[in-house]
Image (cartoon, rainbow, N blue to C red):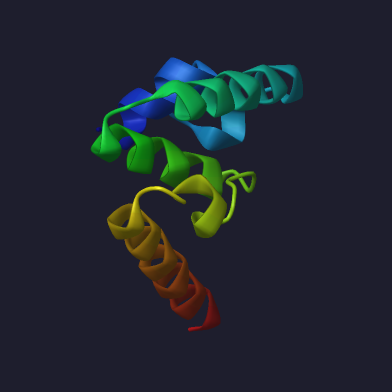
Length: 87
């Protein structure tokens, strides 16, 4: 999934700085619903990473409780992001 396409689909723009507060709230709700109903593992992971980027993703253990491979990938993603923030 392409990040710009996801941003435009959910937030109406591919520029996160241009998202109006009311659009942000509505997009977060739609994104959370889509994440909860998505069945394709790759798409679920992509939606989760977008939710994480906006600060409202569930913890990997909750998000991927029945998908150990995705849980591990999400934990590794968070670990890498944390390392990048520290540098």
